[in-house]
Length: 94
Picture 1 (cartoon, rainbow, N blue to C red):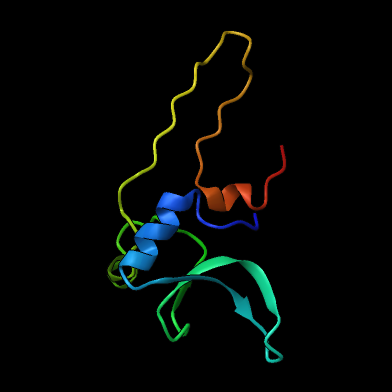
Picture 2 (cartoon, rainbow, N blue to C red):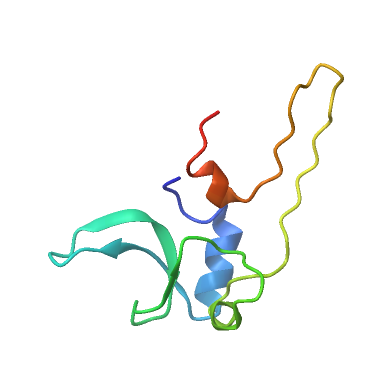
C-alpha cells in the first residue's frame, strides 16, 4: 500500500500537531516506500500509519488512537470474513 494517510483530514491533523507526512529517502535523496509519519527532523518514528494504539510519541505528532470504523452488510452468500489491520492488507491480495 503506497498512499498518503486515508484522507486529507488525517494529513491535516498530523501537520497541525507538528508531524510530517513524507516517504523515506535513500542516501541520494530519492524517495521510496509508503508515506510515513515523522517528526520535523524526519528521524523518527517513521510510522506508515496515521492511527495507532499506545504510541505516546507518535500521538504528539498527530497520530490518533481513535479507531476508524467501517460498517458493511454481511450476506448469507458471503464465504469468509477477515478482521485485520491495514498492515495485513499490505501483504494480502484480494
